[in-house]
Image (cartoon, rainbow, N blue to C red; front, top):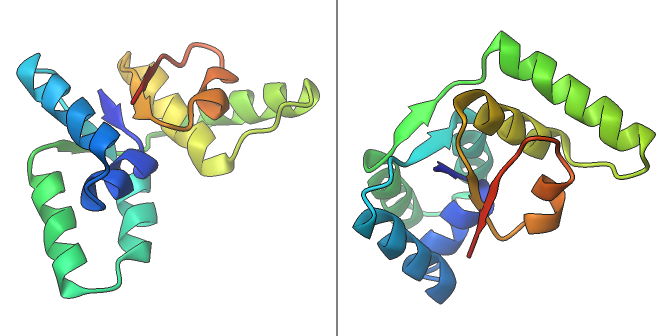
Length: 126
């Protein structure tokens, strides 16, 4: 399962839905991954040493995965298609979606509609 940035932020904010989803994933022994893009997005918003420590704790329980050339090509196709169909998606979300497709993983997110507009991206909402 590829954990989206909003999920990581919600976990750090101790959001009930995010915490319950994490417990479910851990109970099912799902492998948890985070993209380098989410590390950047979430890391940029960190405002205290406590938030940094919480974020590092979350990351210590996951595998951080990179954004590769094949993901970039996939994300470009997602962006072109969604724009052509008048259903634009965010650039970083398209890259996260492309990583998920390439790794055959679902994206754990509350940003359901954004990711469902991307061909081949499976969503695991909370």
